Image (tube, rainbow, N blue to C red; front, top):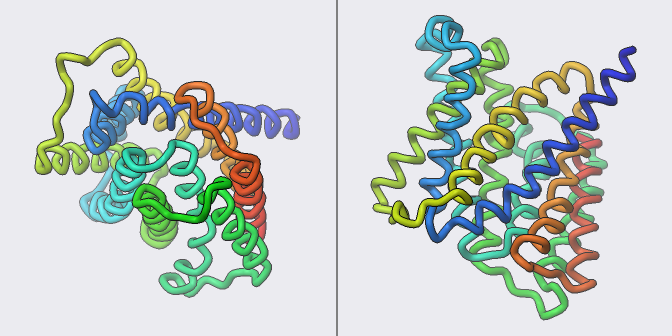
Length: 288
């Protein structure tokens, strides 16, 4: 019975991660109308609205000021990561942006050691070495090695995501996970919209159509709120290694759907590099 439940959760996680692969090219495809930082704000406020509709009393009455202060801190890392990643889509392909953003698992052991004094297994260097080799082939893509600003922004986003994971473990382990997610969504959405207005991003309100609305609802409801809920359940049943390996498949899905939706292509060398990165990230997740 337990194995059947684990299999269902595993397949559901895999399905939602596959949907994340669709979300990347969708986000890039609507950027002429919905600019990157504004997109982050709307997406996370939609996710917060879903959480609030599910359990309004819990959100309004069960979080202390101390809890909110700690959640706000980790939300800073989260919003920084998503803004950097969304902006990176302006300068690089959706495929590359996803591959680089998913390397956060490589930074976690080193940052955790610096911040939480946590030990890590030396075999993590195997995954890191394979991933770095894969990065080289992915970026060169058969046409010579050159790193563009978008790749660097996506890599910076992965560092922010790693810091979010570490500070979540450090500061909010005793706070209810539902409250952590709900208030993170609220804080990230609010901060992103404030930054968007500060930088005067131009939103194409007159061009807002079914595609833009559908993409934002898809990202807010399925990719953010639903994935969080399923992952919370999955973490009680599945090992961290299993979840880490499932997330390592995200760049593969993103590459497939970026080809289908945006027409992005990789050379055989780029495909090999992407495969190496998936393997390296998966190994790093297992050894972490």
